[in-house]
Image (tube, rainbow over the protein chains, first blue to last red):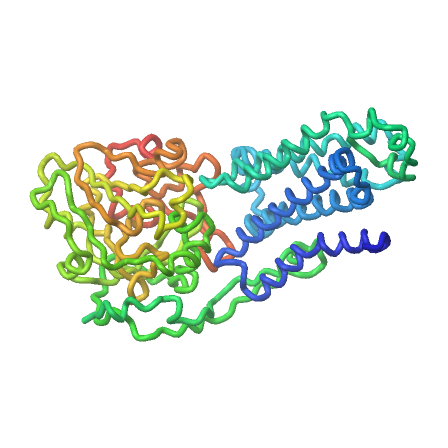
Length: 213
Length: 314
């Protein structure tokens, strides 16, 4: 794919699940319980995109790929976007803004508590996702804040695990993927002790400032 | 009066899916994507082909609540033997063989037998019972069942004085029920009732819905319907009815005893540990409605539980 098409391509790809949701809703293909179906799909894509954004660094470490680093931020922001839609669907459609019920849910239902916590954890990351925020905060502080993404991902996956009744296959796959992605960060980076040829490669300008390991 | 050969026709082919529905403007509904919530209701125009069962007696405990469209009743099912997704049973149960089929009556009874399903059904006058169905997952439907009182079967089996509980078992056949290939639950599915519960006139064994033979995904050829209890008590595809001295170990109760009790009476006061049971979403409705004690059947069944702590025996 030509370099200039990478970002638009990923942007469109990230929107496809939402488009499908809209089309299915319009065609009455969201099961007899469309609100539950919408929440399930939006939650699924939140976790999928969140884990995809966490895969960027290991892909670079292990395979030397770098293209994904240019879309990591966008994918992460889409994860937040889907999380916001998921949460808003819960507030508006599932609960019809009944805040006494919503409050009770968040306090008493641990899977909702932890899902809410995951969403709240993502907010500062989304808010500080701009280059300006990196400058304002300073890279080190910005990077520390953005390590919260690991917390959010763990909370999000536990939210899913605690939600299901008996069939743990899907949440287990998310948990396994997340575990691999987290442990991958402890493995020495490829090329750390590499040949001069490799270390001598020029760094991709502009990437370092946004990298979070 | 009714014709089983005709009943073998795949039920899904009999009707067109046109139903009242919620049309969400998808995520756009949330205002975040900019589009407004579109929330429309289309009139139901379900074609009703000639019913399998005619001249059915209208049974007791009627409700005038709006019945859940058959397309919803037959496509939104918890029936893990055919997959854990709500749409899986409708997709995977089509080739399930409900004939030949036998039901074993055994245990503490004077007349143990293994009876052919059609012989069994012939013994009892069929009737229509329109019941609310409340799932433990906080959604509900209104379903017109065809069946016969469970009490009639129990009486004919002549339980001994030792019979205190009745256990029902679903068919075990992972070739026919692909969901049983995965150990999601401890197969075969087992459910149970106290013997006095089985004698209650509300409890029925269903062989049909909406005037025709029960679709496979709804539990054909024979399922339990106990409308004052959560839906998971309504065991499907029954092959064995055992009369026991002791309370049987039931499937969901074994799986998570803190979440699914043996009694599983619908109770808005006792929450599932992971979600509230105070409200429910009636399929096809937007706003949740309040869940009623014993699913609205308290006047009929509450007396079965006099003196029991329903928080402990949930």
